[in-house]
Length: 279
Image 1 (cartoon, helix red, strand yellow):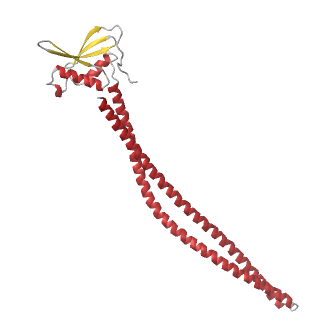
Image 2 (cartoon, rainbow, N blue to C red; image 1 turned 135 degrees about the vertical axis):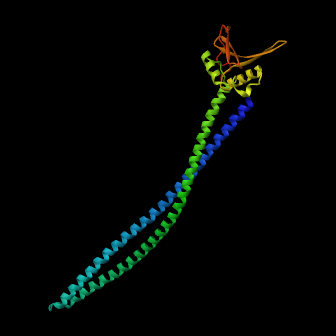
Image 3 (cartoon, rainbow, N blue to C red; image 1 turned 90 degrees about the vertical axis):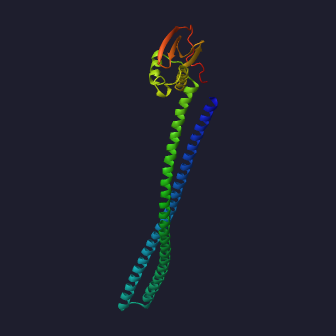
């Protein structure tokens, strides 16, 4: 009996341990998938930030370019006005032409810089588009894996809870088997006998009184009660019954009929309710 109980406990603990390991394994996969998604999103945000900065630079250069072009237009207008004035000096014309050339040079430089920035932005935009495509593909794949991981995690969690419930149930049964007690009252004994079918079960109809007494003893023990079978014999007959101790009183139970007879109060000091309580 002890070996069986020990083996049962080992099997239950092994099942619980496996369920816990599966839960942790699926949870790790779920965390890893979420971490990968976060990393990819961070990469995309970085590229988008670079593009935003590049676009801001391009807008600034375009503003400077417009300003320079407006300046050139103003200088050219001044030059034309100066040419139309009879008293305009050659020095004024020369200075205006120099300013126009300087502005044209700045315009050329700004146009070159703007073209370079636009090229970078174009490359960044292409890279972002490609990265978004890769991310969408990866996200779709990871979402599938995430869905599977969630399913597996839920299953592992369900299995773990089932194992815990089974272990708790089996532990309760083990406690009953390892720590049986006497019935508290005659009413409790009667109630238990009414639930038990040893006296009415067709499978036991052909058995002798001794067999039924032992069956009743085992069934009571499985429910956590002490209802010991007793056997006596003379030269003609074999007698069998079950004994129930309730407080200081002894009751005889007939397994084939569920009949109860009180022998009387025989103990000066009632026996312990649990003869061998769990430590």
